[in-house]
Length: 212
Image (cartoon, rainbow, N blue to C red):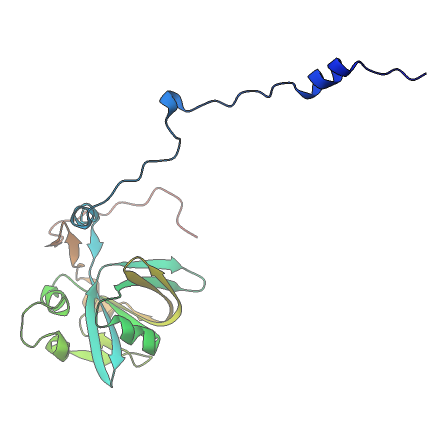
């Protein structure tokens, strides 16, 4: 006759308690609390991050168009990709979306007036007249500002919506460093909602591993 385990033993073996999971201290949830961020304060804090200043240009109705932008980032080396973030409320955003192309003009320290104008300062000639800026057609036909210390001409390959901005990922089709004449010109910098210029600078080698 086969041995039959007592019923009570079987029930107890199935009802063994599982190890208790640790509870968060003081009964608090481990989920981070949501904090409402005021837009003005956010702008103030982000202003602590120093950036260069660029003018993003494109073409609409056979006319050059431009706007001041400092939300620029490289994305990839192979293929060469960059990203510019444009507020969807700005006049140039639908133009870039429709044409599918844009150029980035990195401004030098002597081009503050162009930065102000393309940021829609009350000056004449104004942004609607391309600020009266001297420019030339680049390799791909996009308008490039004379005197910019670097330019990149791009084709939009992807667009993402994030909050109140559109992020335009651009494949770099042509680029230029301004040549020897612009090599000695420092960049126009933006910090705490003010312009900065480099009066004295010291170079130091990067100790970390170069990005591959």
